[in-house]
Amino acid sequence: MKGARHFLPDETYSEKSMEDSKDFAKGLSIGIIMDGNGRWAKSRGLPRTAGHKKGAQVFQDIADYCDELGVESVYFYAFSTENWKRPAEEVGAIMRLFGEYLLKGFDYKNRNIRIKFMGARTVLDEIGSPNLQILLDPVNLLNMENVDQREEVFAETIELLGKDVAMIHFKDFLRQDADGQLAATGAGQGGMGDYRTILRFAKEQKPYVFATLENTTPENAVQCLQYLQKQYDEC
Image (cartoon, rainbow, N blue to C red):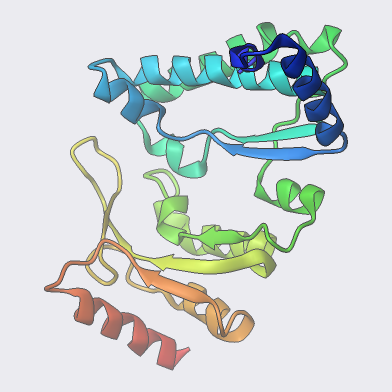
């Protein structure tokens, strides 16, 4: 990233382009979703942790270039609630990379740069754009530690983020997959049982929200829909 402008054939044009870029960057906020690191590594026969390290290096390049341009703020979506479900070794590697690249390699103390770890509500409030909304996937909020308190998890999520929800994904969970974690399945096909908290929220507060069925099959799609429709009607 930082050396990208040097690929331009004419250095004079390159310098002018850089100045134009700096003018454009004034007051600019950029959002970046860091995704695909594991797939990048797998496609090259490497462990997933190697992909995360490469992603961290790219993050630093982007951050350096944005600093050079004078971009006001950059938001990186780097670790989600669902990521906690990954193997402990992989999660630990990601956390170590946060320390290495954010705190050490970024040298933020000497560069007039502030780093903030932000949750969804903070990002929504700080950006303040109606174009930034929430895709609510209730099962993705769950793990083996909180699954038995899922009603509390859903209620807290709705209270915190409900007004910004634009779409809801409906699916179910099985208690364990091959790694001893929750596995996704079609609605009404697992351990969820009661969807009324989510459905009542949709019915009362988001009557025109987009909703999709996930992890269904051609054989059970109608059954999953009917299962949800029955509970929706009972709300």
